[in-house]
Image 1 (cartoon, rainbow over the protein chains, first blue to last red):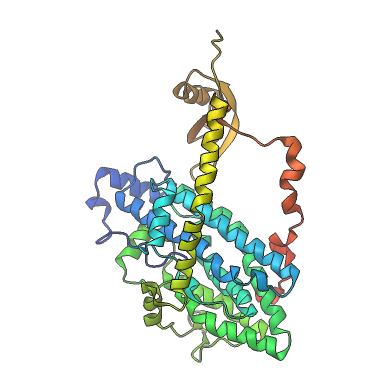
Image 2: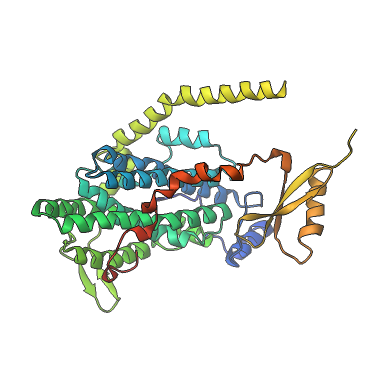
Length: 328
Length: 94
């Protein structure tokens, strides 16, 4: 999931009887499956939670360009380079759709950037891991984009109109991302022994961080219950993680690669795989800023923002001057 | 002095959750009247749940004759389409 552990400010989910008339009318619209649009009344908690969630999602798209961008100049062929460039370009586009959806809630782009840069808003934990060999680019497309799709497909039905429409656009474009990743994995897995080893190494390193993308088990979380009532979250973290594992295991088998989990086995009764939980202490460390690449990633974003300031200001000055000349 | 009302472009959201779509234009003295007129001109059969009006003069459009060079860059990038990659059936939907 690109948005992890989004707080709702809720102390518990109110029943319809406990709600004010406005809140009740709002909840009933959400329950009927109606979309909420920016200028309509909404509970303050709904608005704030959505700003956090959509903002975190947007930041993830933008920061997510960095681990893959690392390989644009190192791609093994011109074709792979062009494909990777197109993929990273898509991620920038996805970030922009999402920032615009967040801005309809009354927050400015600059505020969101400021909060990313000062660490008060997060991005997905997954992008704090390094991409060490070319197979990592395959693993990122296959696993990371695969996990993102798992999360984003149900969010197309989310209750907030602009978020839902951004998700619909994004989902249309994600299939390319996952397939190009799997295509790289197929090449590597069927290649030389060295290439096979790289593919297995990439799977070993990205498996558990990918499972962490869905966030910790949220069976008992107040935030999760409130978000599900508001339909800004459609499935629990555990449901999505299970679906992801069930989908991914046969894909790994086809590649002839081994999922790094001795406890992985088919459970006939539940109709899904049993699997090991990731190391959640590692997850909380990465979220707290202590992952392998947190400083590098945030540093790169802040540097890009600061180094680009003169250019943004220059274009604005030009537009103002040009506007005055036309008015005169 | 010309007293012709300005032209407005009308966008209607047909159903909850969908994008507003351009349906046409009309003349009106101000934005509020444009919305009222749009209701009468474009939603007489209950076609919408919401109306946007934008002054036509405020819209900047690309020129249809520039279509070739404007959109050319994406023509050569067939790999942006998922079907560019052959994924074996036994792997499942991707």
